[in-house]
Length: 68
Image (cartoon, rainbow, N blue to C red; front, side, top):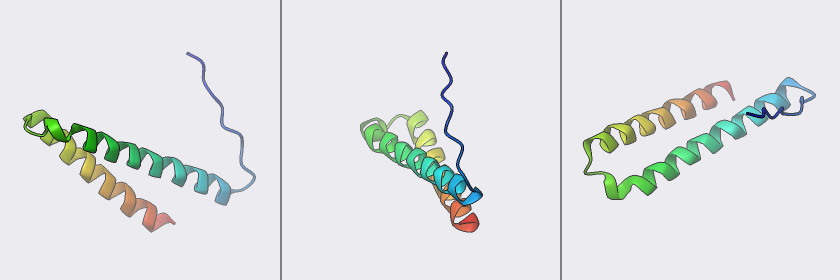
């Protein structure tokens, strides 16, 4: 498995901005997963997983707001 190295940013602010962008992209990916799974919401396993994704999004956004 090839590992990709991200370029080193020049400042802590640049690194934080890149990390924040990545986290928001991951949050959006979770939201997309939730939307794609809607037809399967009757499955109890999906309901639990979707609840987890909602909680994860909420906590991640709170953390980003706190450190930003």
